[in-house]
Every structure is written in C-alpha cells, then in structure tokens.
Amino acid sequence: MQARAASAGVRLRPHAKTHKSPAVARWQLDAGAVGITCAKIGEAEVFADAGVSDIRLAYPLHPSNAPRILALMDRARVSIVVDDANVAEAWSAAMLAAGRKLDVLIKVDVGFHRCGIDPESPRAAAAARDIASLAGLNVLGLLAHAGHAYGARSEEELAVIAETESSVLRSLAAELRRLGVEVHEVSVGSTPTSRFIERQEGVTEMRPGNYVFFDRTQVGLGAARLDDCALSVVSTVVSRPAPSRIIFDAGSKTLSSDAVRGFGTGAGHGLVYPSLDAPAPDPSIAIERLSEEHGIARVPAACALRPGDRVRILPNHACAVANLADEFLVVDAGAGAIVDRLPVAARGRVW
Image (cartoon, rainbow, N blue to C red):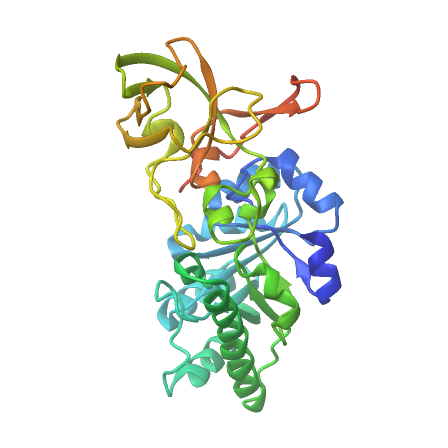
C-alpha cells in the first residue's frame, strides 16, 4: 500500500482502528506513512503515549472533549474533522480560550450518507468558508470516506465510487479556492477503493486501514486474495452434537457479528480452514449462527472434525475482530511457530 501511495504521489495515513497496535503502526510509519488515522480519542491517546507524533481523528468529535484534545496536542500533532458550523464555532471558542489553534479538515459526504457536509447544497462552499474563517481553527482542507464502496456489486461500480469521491472533492475544493480559502489537503480513505488511487486526481492523502490484514470481505470485493489475508482466528471444536453440526469456541465475542460483503460472496461468519496448516478453506463447513461464545457450523456427515480439533477461521471483518483480542500472535508460516506477541494496546478504546 505504501508503494501504491508513492506511485500515485499521495501521502499514506493508515487508519489504525484496524489493528489498534502501536507496534503495527510503527511498521507502517517506518515504511513511509506520514502519520496515522484514528476514530476515537482513546485510540489516539494510546498511540500518542507510544510515540506516534502525527494523528488525525477522522471522526466528528464534540467540543466537550476539548480538554482531552488539548492534552493530546501537547504530545502529538493532532487534527480532527468537522461537518457542523455550530460545532466548529464551539471548537474555535475552546481553542481560543486555551490560547491554541486546532488543525481541522471539513468532512464531506461523497455518497455514503453518514457524516459530512452535503456537497450538493448551494450553501456547501459558503459554510466551509465560514468554518475556515474561525480564529481558533486552522482548516487544512477536505476529507471524505466512500464507505458505500463496501456495498459495491462489481469492480466497475467500485471504480465509479472512487471517481465520484475525488470529483466531488475536486469541485468543492475549486469553489473554496475561488472564495479565497486555501485547500492544502484532500484526503480519501477506503481499502476497496485504494486500487484506483492513481485515477483520483486532486487527492493528496489516502487513509485505508483494513489492508494491513485484509479479510474475507476484502477478498469478496477483489481487494485481496485469500493468501494475502494475514489475520485469522484459531478455534477449537468443542462439541459435535449431530453429524451435520459442530460447535466452535468462537462466537460473536470472538468473530464479531459482522456479515460478509462483496461481489456475490456467500453467507456465514468466516471461512474455515479445517486444520492450522490447511492450504485452503473448506467450503463445506459453514458457520451459520453465532451466540456469544459459540460458533454453530453446518458440516457434511463425512467431515472429520471432532471435539478437540483446532481450525483456523478467516473472519468477515478483521477490524472488528482485532478489537476483541488482547494480542496478536505473529506466526512464522514456514515453521509453524509463534515468533512474537503484539499487544492490541488500544483494544476497547471506543470513547
């Protein structure tokens, strides 16, 4: 991903909510990333404590969090996003009261319809200009997340989503410049759309996160192959109460409840490799249901798995799974040996 960003002439700022590990973030920074992206302040605090010096919070934060942001600014370069004029005014007031100035980017809705100003509103550019005029804020530019890419049904639809994302941002940036507002940064972020970064004209930064592990959804979206996926869950068969049903000790508290997405990808809660060294998943083993601690799988009567056997499960969504674990076990695939343990230091930091 770093090579892809460099080839396109953009900066890479990985989203660290995927791994929540300062050790993994250090690998990304050492490879050339300019900083990291976080969702919540709790995550950012963990990474700042570990020495990460440039952190972007790509999440709408309320100004009631100003004391925590100010403390974070003492340890790292911090930027946040805003998409509401009243919230921006309150952030500006909080910064002026503290004698500080906060870097912000204006979040733009490019089709996901979650957060962000509406670029089709006739007041969009004027509203952004008004935010940029606030004395306590330093507006760096525009930021978007084309999260609807995860619902794409084809490679062609993904390409259109990526092009729309950059064209919407280019258009709004041009309007702002006509109004006298400097736009230094145009930031986009999504692992599925990252393969089109060379076509996204005007973009200065990309913020993919999931690429560091990949998962079943990314395979379904054509962003990765099975062999590219680095994170899996080791699980034990704890029961086989019927010839066609086995129970794994990995339920929703391990695999999360996220469904799989992709171009016609099947259902179920992960792909099951029938042994720890199996070269491929077994499509006849389907994890159909999850309770908190149980993964209920349908299997053919001929399936050889019995209580005590261990399998490897490729999860639907690696980001959610990582947040449920205390540590990553780093395995030398050739030797089949654990060579390191990495704490998931920001696990559960969702506030």
